[in-house]
Amino acid sequence: MADRFGPRGTFAIVIPLQNANMQPEYEAMRPAGINNQIYRFDISAHDKASEAVLDAVPGSLLCWPDMIIGGVSMEMHAWSHDQ
Image (cartoon, rainbow, N blue to C red; front, side, top):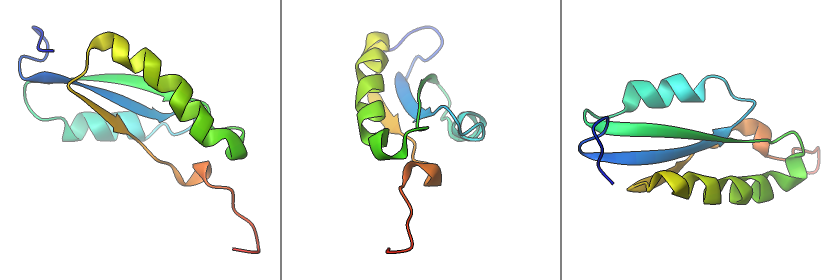
């Protein structure tokens, strides 16, 4: 939904709480006329990262976004020697 800060639209960006680089990177890629709204989720429990993302999405809908963008961080994956 367009507003005075984003006359062309609004993007809800769901990113990991622990990744401090993502927000400025998404801001640098933001097209003119788009309003970025950042929503964060906690990935400290690696095996529950998908649930954390799904918990953050309903809150992102409150800004009536035209698009929801999900940021992924390497820390979200459970690594083991077996993989």
